Amino acid sequence: MTASGFLAERRPITGPMAWTGADFGPRSEWHYAFSPAQLAEIEAAAAHLGTLGRALSEVTSADFPLPTLGDELRRMDEVLRSGCGFVLFSGIDVTRHSEDMLRLIFVGIGSYFGVSVSQSHRGDYLGDVIDRAEPGNERPYRRGGTISMHRDPSDIVGLFCLRNAKEGGLSRVASAATIWNTMLAERPDLLEPLIEGFRFYRPTADRGDSPALTPVSIPVFAQDADGQLHCSYIPELIRSAAQHGAELSAQALEALKVFEEIANRDGVFLDMEFQPGDMQFLNDRTTVHGRTDYRDWPEQDRKRHLFRLWMMCPHWSEATRRLRVFDEFDRAGGGIRKAA
Image (cartoon, rainbow, N blue to C red; front, side, top):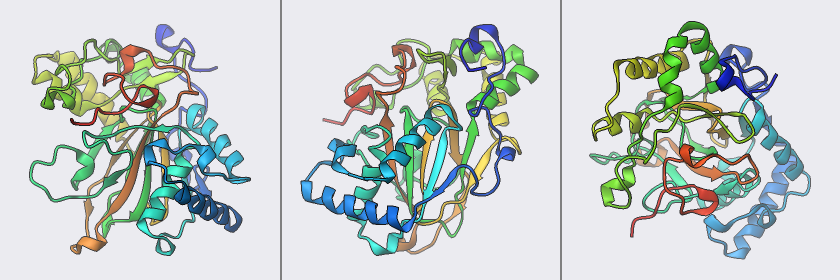
């Protein structure tokens, strides 16, 4: 049985996307270690890409030729789309390469999964996840501490670890299908507000680039054009919308609270401890993710630092306009508008 029709029929979702953290061992099915031959291909492809003078936003898989590994990455695309929805690659020695070369490696591998899009008003196509220690930082990825479970407004989010924290900072992932199944079994009375959806606050409104609220309610649980699950859970934007006039009922607040509780329930989530050189890709439609609290190194050059990609996937089934948080302006209809 597939996810097709699960919404109207209020039935469980079965198959590989409905997993629990208890289903996996440490670095088991979701872990792929590059072989020495594959690492040599990656290095050669990055060197080639470096000669092309491409902007990171323009890189395609044709610019990053991987004669044998490319087929494996295309197979992993199916794991991301209709399998468990996540994969972790390891084996890249970050001490062997400059930061610029590591950026090329990450963008090049990511190009086999999707089209990178802008992820901030700065027009970043490759973000830096690091605590900037700047008062009033507006984005969680630019400050330290816990990040609550959510999805990003993209099809895939990628993270590449350059340096890990002194302690903590685990990447927490949960299956949106399992959260649906659990709510269906335990609290079916709370599904309706999640299906009806919420108005989202759009941070681009702070600069006058767009209306403060999405024009329509965006459902937390929905289906793509092919009937597959599409989860849109960004609690920060939902609660910000409530402060701008989109009131939340008591039932809606409880539904969000229960969703969060299930996503953080022992046995449901999977925690990944990144090591330098680890590269994670997540399906933003079928999983939610967050970060545990962490203790960083005091030295600036040792602080926890990851690269981040947001990618859209034109080869996946199209998401309806109702499922988009931001107005379409970037490639493949994704991303955040760059400030003028």
